[in-house]
Length: 264
Image 1: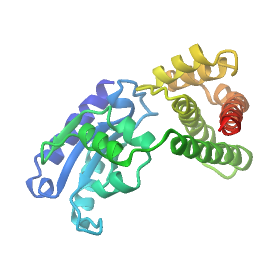
Image 2: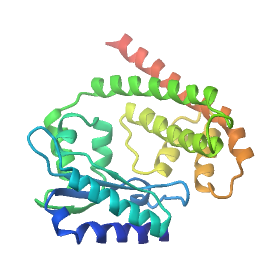
Image 3: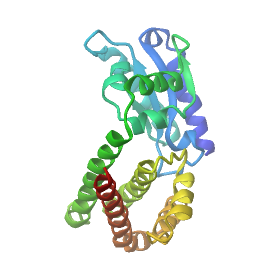
Image 4: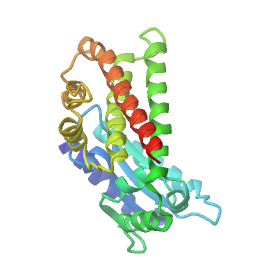
């Protein structure tokens, strides 16, 4: 975690001390595994939400984007980590971002807010205004889960060492991320919100141990935690198990959704 924290401090320094840049930024917040203290070297990114000021049509200045790009380059060059800057506008949050993301964003600490309005407050106000029903959230989860299952399976079948550089590491990282994403959606379907990947894993293990092969998510958690020690052969051998786990979870969500529809 030390290298991530040092890189984060450098990123904050470079951005916050640029007065011209800061005139065009509404808010900065830390997201993801660094915020959760679950970051893994050579696996995790530093996810920084930077909300640019925009005109009435959501357009922002390219000079802001270019400045942020240069600062991300500088941080990555110095610390050999990926600084991933998410440029969501306020309009994006208010009209486009799903309730799932807004709720997770509301857990995060704000680094800078021009108006004093934190990301937590912005997200909670939007959620309150939208008044998303449980039915709408569940319909969204069904659509997104089907898509993730299709896409991760498509890549498993189609990608290989002959057509994709670093295939095993690239696909392995995405597969593990998708396992936690699908697991999180399964929990959210039942109105259970987890703040960390460990929380997701623990909630799945305790609540669904009779429905899923929970050893597979425990393996995914172990792979992520030991990313720099696991060899490519062991990682690739896990792929079918990871795909099968995603298949189990999505099938469970679909079955539950059909049963809920039958009751209404």
